[in-house]
Image 1: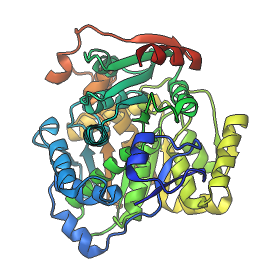
Image 2 (image 1 turned 30 degrees about the vertical axis):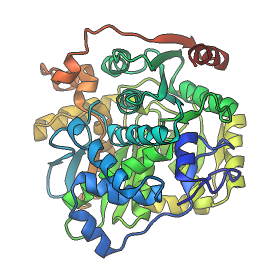
Image 3 (image 1 turned 45 degrees about the horizontal axis):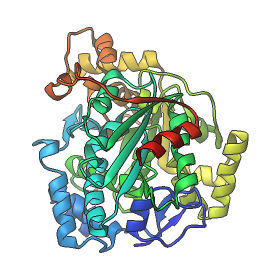
Length: 460
């Protein structure tokens, strides 16, 4: 399996090169040169596997022998055991057509644990084999940071830098990062929003991607392994709900588009997916795109579903490349986005995308109402992001369409909002409660690439 950049100038790279590069040398994102396709017989075989073995069977195809299969299988077995508890994913049945896949049983109570625990264990193996050290740089709008820290800092060959927007992640999300006491972890608060953090990371990569003393790598979903690790829970959730390979839909709250793009890859691999419904908050850049065909940047607004407070959805570049199949065209589109703040796609491509993707947005007020209604109707607590997905899915899908809503985080990560919605006294799970009063450690910089360069330069 070889990988090439969405922008056409960094092609035919091996899995380990993609793993260790993160962002492609031309500023694009790596995608596989081909996507494996499963027939019905193979899907039935996959449906019989437990989660670690399913992860192995689905993802080994993208590694293409660069890790010996016996050792890679052990990596998968080690990844999805103790840190995810007895119940790796639980499925909540609301009625005959509606199911919630609870993706928050990992160590940081968020769906990103599934990919970042795997990524951390792959990094650990590859770095030991190659006898090299790595500088990992990432930006977070809430959950990626702690999941990356818990997943990737275990390797002694890693220095990990996580940027987060000051005052724009929930308290518990921040404390999950800033109370993690390891000498190779550096949390950096940025005076700005998530898009500023993401831009700093991308610009740093552009400056230092070839610097061998740094050996830069990414943990954001620009790293292909993040996508690879997320396809597994689509298959797993599908097999728990649909027993006869009948198509169903997935409803995905999304900001950076990585989670939704993983679902798109699953459909290309043969999983019988009808629709993927993109659910946004007031930062509705993706909803606006699907309505008009125009990607237009606006000011990022603060919401009660902060992990979606994004205006630049990085992984959308991968989706566009799938339709255009032309690196030059993709480069032109994103050059326009950078210089003019917008671009427009061909109508024929937009029409094809809309066959697969549904879309919609939800206000903060409606989000609160949805959390309350789910508690009253089903005696079940959901976080604000899952609430956005649930409500948008209800509006966009027909009543008889079977669907799975992806619950992307535990409600306790947004406790104040959920308390306000349901009017009940609820508390953190034990593992979150114990960090509330722990000492925090983080650094503060302005939204300035020179400040970031100076900070990392002092550490490395």
